[in-house]
Length: 421
Image (tube, rainbow, N blue to C red; front, side):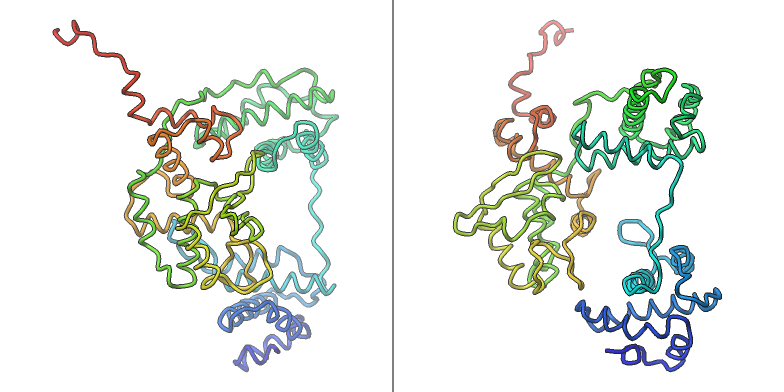
């Protein structure tokens, strides 16, 4: 397949052929065509790459070896945006994918050199701390990502002072001013995580001898008490409406139906759902091995008849023919494993179509409703904790506060004198 066979406009073909990218367009089209895109998706991707080439021509780029990520960013800034169903604004998909795919192809064939990662003064300090968290503290990848995301802006704010030989100039007042700038507009939990991450880094810097004194204790803790709130989620009786919002006879509907039913049946996280593999299904024993999450335990659950039928329907009708072992895949080529953000979109759109009003509309709200229902049915904390994959019963104990039946049994009668008065 060639560039001319996809783009019919002689005017566009002339522009691209006479550009610095022209000699490579046939190879680019042949490469992306092997991925398995539909005709419409392939046309949109190549058309987006063509628009990127026109942008490079207008920008005066005369050598493909001089292309940088900044050229892609400048091009994306010119694309129109549209409002998604969840309230987020996104750039034009065809142009975005076309530019990124073309840059990746040019780098793969050695025309455009790889973009060197910017080296900042604090980079090695940050990496040494992250290595300490991973190897000595044993933190999970998600926790390390959270800690890094909180501390890196702080080091960037320090500028030239974010170096071991300059950390001695750091004062508690400067840290406090930084927190006062960042804290407004953040939720209480976010402020607490920011303080915890900074205290952890400052304690590490003190132990390494970079600070004149230990500044970790100068940060005021954010009051955020355990079990101080009720779990916020939809009512269990309303969740059945979610299944009626998808047409399970179509490919997308069969996938979304299986996703929703699996979340409702097992109360698993989105990360566990997208991590499910065909190898985790034991049809003979009617069991499914759910991947661990947050350094928890793998859980083996029975495949209920409803979930089994939904999975079989999806595997037969909706799942693309591919060698990928993950169960839930995207709808468009190259059929990558479903992302956690896509699970959120599936669930939130089902909530919107069903007209269910709830503070949260993601997959975790289904998990809350599942745990609350299990508690109301008389399941023990240990059983629910095992099914949810919690390592500690304290994580599960919050659902005891919404078990009205059990709470009424332990409630004391109202004093008679108070009633008479």
